[in-house]
Length: 229
Image (cartoon, rainbow, N blue to C red):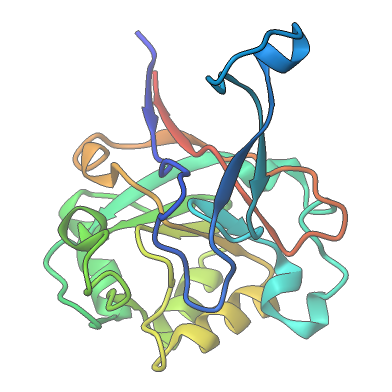
C-alpha cells in the first residue's frame, strides 16, 4: 500500500519568516455573497489574495539564488527531474542549537542505517529542530551544515538536501558558504521541512517537491512529500 507523508509547513499569517523577508499575508479578495449579489455581513471566502516571498515556508532555492555563476538558472529553468528523486533521511537528532554538522556526523548517520548515498539522491537531515523550537525564540538558532560537509555532499553528486530549519547552515557561521557551495556545484536544498521523524528507520523513499513555475524565480514554495511503496 502506498503511504504519502506530508513534509510541508502550513502557510498562515503570523508564521515565522526569515527576518529579512516580507511576512506572509492573506486577505479575502472576493466572497460568495459578492458573486451572488447577496447583502450579507459575513465574508465567506471564495478567493484569497496572498502576499509572500519565493522563500516562504517550506521551499526550494533556485541555483540563481545561491551563486553568481548560476545567475541564469532560475527556478523555472531547472529540470523537473531535480524535484522527483530517490530520498534518504539521516538521523541527526542528537545535534544541539547552532551546532555545525560535519562530514563525520553525516558518515556516522549513514552507517547507523546502512545507507549509501546514490547519485541524484535527495538527502534529508532530521535534527528535530522543528518540533523542539518552531515558534520559539530558539527557532533561528538551528544546527546546520558546515562548509566542508556541504562540499562533501556535493561531491557525492546529490541533487539536493533538505533541512527542518530556515537556514541550511548555521547563521553568521556557515550559512552563506553553504548557499554558495550549492550554487557553485549545481545542487540545491530545501528549507522548513516537517515530519522528518516519520522517515527515520524506514529506508529509501520517493521524494517529490515540485516548485511553482515562476519566471526568473530565485526559489519557490513547494508541497514536499515522501512516498513509501
